[in-house]
Image 1 (spheres, rainbow, N blue to C red):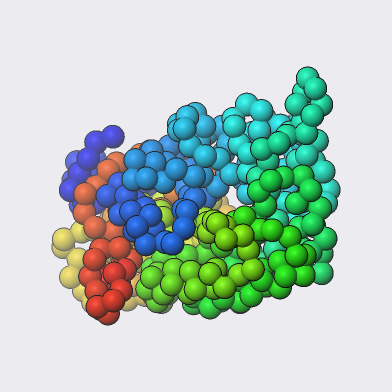
Image 2 (image 1 turned 120 degrees about the horizontal axis):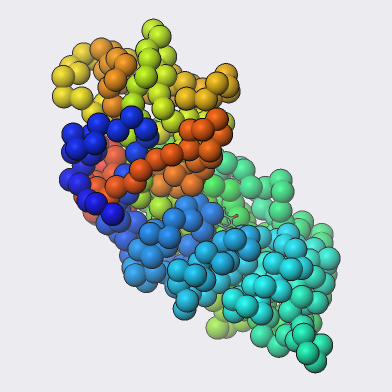
Length: 401
Ligand SMILES: *Cc1c(COP(=O)(O)O)cnc(C)c1O
């Protein structure tokens, strides 16, 4: 992939009339090193946040060896790209065929579940096809439902067993494996470390009630990135509180602590160049949107940082809303996106922080899915990992530029 200093040099070289994704390998590598060095346990990458093979390779080279996969396609993708990676199938609802392929063909031993039915599926699908013997090397994780009250995007409704069901499920699962974990997800973009405190309190209650030996606690994803209006406390505060509460859990003395960040590892990896195709007052019609990398900007009104890429725009900023390229009224992003008030059709805009749940969301709807990709060397539009410190004890302090 060709590399450029920044977005401006990409438009100077290509004058692109389709959206362009800009990738910053150094930013993904920096985030991975930060987690590996500072999280007091094992770090899995949640592949759904951005399944790009280039990104997965960067994370692997930075030292991320475990991958949280949620579909058989993600299992195959990671296995094809990383023959030695550890795969953990953390979607609590899987088909028997997906489980069997993951286990027998791709060496995936770790599976999550939140019901007895799923436990039964996993046990059956992983039997030795010749002898019918049950698998002796399964690693099972019971997913607990926890609150999403501190998070910007809830993951509380869909998955996870509740505190009444958990003890019996933990006891039954324990009979089918030599290694049993508890996992949960506090919701994406958790804006307070206390999200993890209340989740770990629930885990403690479930474990105490079940009185089984627990070999692993997986605190899931939810680690925040930084966006306009969403500036989280230092990640080190999250790590410290998680470590403290982990140490106090009634679990095996050699129990492992895991986390599964998606967003925090890759949000800074990508930005997007879009072109203004028409202006109508304070609305800009741009060439990417709700069915493209700006899915979250449209559907959950997520705020992403923007900057105009033309040197001749000098007027003060005003707030704009965006329309995407498809013929659908829903292809609308309210923003507001502050841009120079003299911006007009033909001008380019860079939208930042789209490495997580951005670049991964592009569809081909209405014929608008294309995007070339280039590497750029400049800093992401915001970073939790660029080394600027506002508190001496915290590394990941933020510098919005
Ligand atoms: C989506 C997901 C993640 C990643 O969540 P982030 O908020 O992006 O960190 C981790 N684990 C599971 C099971 C998930 O579904």
